[in-house]
Image (tube, rainbow, N blue to C red; front, side, top):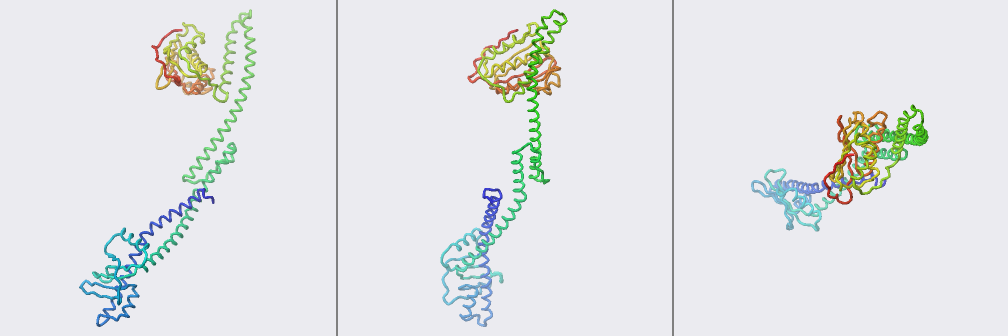
Length: 468
């Protein structure tokens, strides 16, 4: 089991945390063991002192005294009774006390401190221990004890605690490891393996994970992964079909444009025909062929993979907009164009692509019945904003719902909806955008946003209006 695996880390961390817990338990436990040691010796000293009451003279010989002291493990025993009577058992030459402990005083932190002093001290101090008698209320028992036996028993107690801690930590770690392995690690490994297998061949339906039916977070992750894998698989399948369809459309468009080019040459000859009927229908035939060629061109442009070629440059906006009117080939009586653009306003964009976008919007306005078209540009919030407003009949609800969607967003019967879709794509490729601001029965407003030029915007002169 590699140490970098999740299972190994969980095992090591579990052992570590259990050992830390045992250390925290050991500290007060060893202090309590020391207090219990003293309590037991006080109780034993109280019982040993009862031998004095059994003697008719209230005294016992030194041999029996030594034997009783040896049983208690003390050099001397003094019992102070509430009535003032004192019973005492001591050796022939009792040693002097080095330290005194009064069990009726102190607190837990103090007892812990004294316990560690005993554990890590050297030599054998003589301890004078005072405590209340467990058998006679109000009586106080005083003992003279060696510290070395206490230290030895405390270390033995610590060894037993250490052994128990190791057993508990290993058992707990094993149980936690097995539980986490079953509840978490194996399911996560299964999810990871499924993701790896799916990445190798996303279109293979057999590589989709089968949810285990769990209702916890792992079960939810499995369900979401299964849904995600199926969604990606269907998207890839649809993309493959669309790619094949796009290839076919491209080939068909290429052949169709060749056919239309031939038809255009033939139609040019019809315009010079001597037959009045032929001359009358020739313009409509030419317009139909031109629209078909334009549709093929837009379809090829839209189906081209990758972003369109982008050649940015910095240029004045007003001269570009002034080129729109001649390209529309309409008279001033058919369409009035108003320009509200500062002469010093510059942008950084692909000039040809921006021209295509503006020309497309202007032609859409004419097709919508507009008689007045207004171009307004300004510098706002760190971007150049261009608004194109017309007084046409507006966009129908269906066109508004599917605006900028290819083949869906056309506002006129027979339209492809590719014009606005390609226009927005061109704008976004230059770091800008194209949005519909408003459309009513009295007109439509589109807004272009473009990044400003690299240099600071020149001081804008007063807006100029002109007609075309």
